[in-house]
Image (cartoon, rainbow, N blue to C red):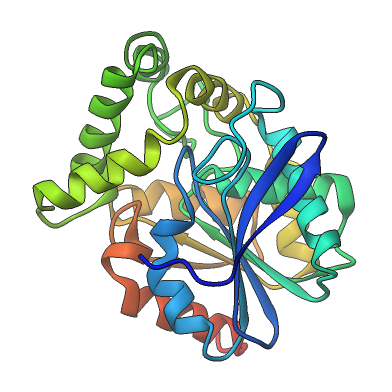
Length: 275
């Protein structure tokens, strides 16, 4: 991907976030998930920058942003998002988070409220990632599986690479990916060192934004897009927690990359008020 209109915004002493800022019109901010980068939103940048101002963020310790030992949690990421919005003087923003990027948005709303927010898009993330009742609650997985990821895979670069590759082929993408695609996706993740990835993983897993999710769906137009593989439980949980959110089902966890045209159409309809 050729990055255009990239800039750096200082969000904390010695910490700069890389921000891609393309196009004109109503602003949309895309926030990638756990250890991923602006690169995964290439199809959204290309599409929506024709009609909107599209901003994509590398969160702290992701991608081109500063790698730091401080603030690798979603409370700080919410504060960082506020700094970016203030620095760019944005108003009436649509916030679109993917996976753990949704946690950043819920935390931002908890801290800052809705004065600058026009609408919200949550891409395939429960507001409460862990529960002992994983048969009924929408969670990332059984507690034992989550513990294995944290204690076994996120202990060195090889383990992180193995985890991301396995997660890509089993959860993120529905079709067969090429070896080059698989290596590229793993490379995006490994720009975040494993010892920071483990902090982010724990922070995300222990987050609980059910109250923020409910409030968000009541105060501004909200769209939740969930993957096919857990569509039933994710839909039921979202209807319970965020009853006023529109809900769509599409592809795997990385549906906006694999099924970009269908994803972009869903977002266009939502932004136009058709949902």
